[in-house]
Image (cartoon, rainbow, N blue to C red; front, side, top):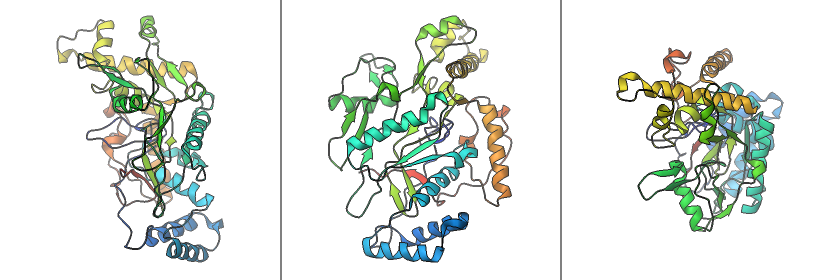
Length: 398
């Protein structure tokens, strides 16, 4: 989607951006430890408060607020964001996401403040409500639900899943996979906890929530009314619908930390909507995912005897056509990579007028299909600043 995550090679865009090209956001490095004796870095806190007040002139007296924050950190080791600071920080974290092509929409992010939801049951209910709100009958909304932050001596509850919705994968005796290999590890863990599955090709994984380090996670079936799935068909080939392929509508990343002003929110699931190439060129086509290209090329009666026939390229285009066609037919929001490329350049122009840089990772911004034919290919971008905050960061393991 337009939010994204880190992988050794260019990964499935994830769930890091609200369009699907990786998914809400780039994973920034884990933050450095604050000075000894302090849980939250007061310098990071002050810098954020001053940034918030500079951008929000109606936010009150900045010196008064800075004094309150520094005093609270001195007394308790940390501080609490106001709802307005939290919403602003979440949106700017999206704006700062160098791997996200969909940042034009950063101001539209719906921020749900659920810091008081303490138990796993409460968090699961809020995650499912997040999906319902984001689905919005198919008109996908960018949404983030922010749960409690880490506090001195009290690490906050974590969501184990990489995404709120994802398909399970099952290793077969022949070494192949049924379903999504990316969901294999979580499927195995869920089954060890008692989850029963049909071992089908598109089984929605349960939600796993871990309240404390070392504890067994609680698991929850994702309700049907919280999971909109789109059956895939092709505008020209009637046989395509008979393959039984489908994909879920909301790519909601759930394993990254939202860092705002030195405070870390390790459970803050966020989503945008998919960009078609994330599903058609990555999730369904990658060799380490559903790996459908050879199967579809045979059905398309293409010559696969040589790479020079470009059968992979031709199949990839038809698979992407099917994905875009199906989401449009179902009335579910999905962007195409050419339109989104133009919108990203519009975002850059808007940020330049406001005097702000737009750091971008070229290898993530350029789509994985027909990259050279898109507007974002033929230019340079502001360098990525790993220290830029607020940000979505790689979550430190327990």
